[in-house]
Image 1 (spheres, one colour):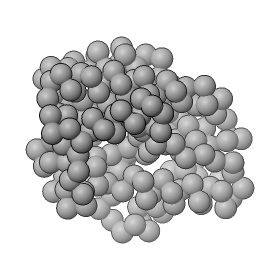
Image 2 (tube, one colour):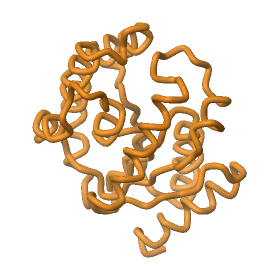
Image 3 (cartoon, helix red, strand yellow):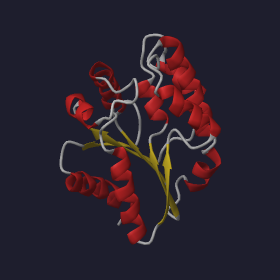
Image 4 (tube, one colour):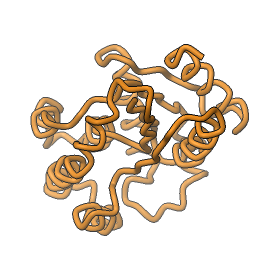
Length: 195
């Protein structure tokens, strides 16, 4: 099974991914954590570009869209082996939905992002950790150009709009305590895995 945690910077994806992974392992599931960008050469280039002050500019956003799509393909075989299976659970911190929501300036049409990600596997389940952008910004280290209030507000709205257009997306309130957020994630997973 391919499970993805999504949300704006500061929503707690990394922490909740770790907690979810530990819980599923304690239940006897074989799991693997993934993160985008990956540690591939393409992923390293992306991480460097995310710290570029011009990362939210038109050309940089277009370039990042293509780089992220290429980076995702490095994971494709592993994801396809796990999709739909309960034998192994891949838990990813981000997916192509991040591109849909983050590469969000006027120079990019979302249909183009879908097109360049046409060979990217879709998650079996996406958990959107929703957090007000004003709270999220207080949790960010502000090392990346995307970590500013106006950008995160637009990105959050893009995420929330996915619920009406995409399948298998569940929204979890990320403003609650760490424990409550994890408990709400687990409820969704229990239903998905028939636990």
